[in-house]
Length: 209
Image 1 (cartoon, rainbow, N blue to C red):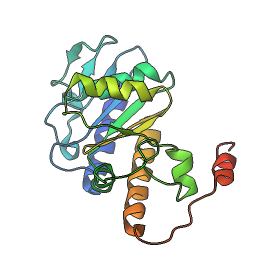
Image 2: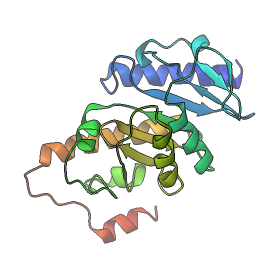
Image 3: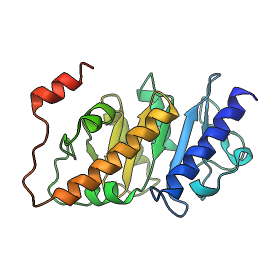
Image 4: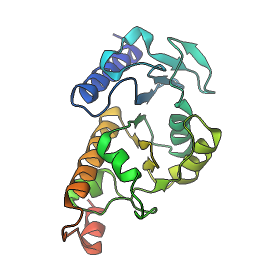
């Protein structure tokens, strides 16, 4: 099986796993991976991540041109700016996961860092999470807003929309997205309670691991 075929299968497995565990629903969410020869594979537009067919996965060239498969996700620009701004980016996951979206709708959250460092794994897998101001889905201005942050952050939270997370592999991007969602859930469960997040010194120490 070729590398491209393996990547197509992996996208479908990851999509089904995310869907079956309730991290995405309907036809929301999209996944992409970088191809060794350049260009990307992306999930198609209006496709459920729970029912992906490897043959339908969209293939794009290095300029973003549609090469084969079904039409790519309408949010392909979110993926492309991550690849363009992050040299080590090999995969991108964008979901409308419930708890992360809920945090993105809250009034008064820290726009420079939406979630506190509640756990060590959140710090290591996500780190600082900036909030991207609201833009209509598919609007070019959203791509520009994400682009401004992507060179410094591998994960961002779109206001009233959801997270966009890049990784050095598809597994890394999925794991970071799941960690973000679970931390968002913890954050919401603990709202109104006195919490004990990691200290700045503890966060700095984790950055050295």
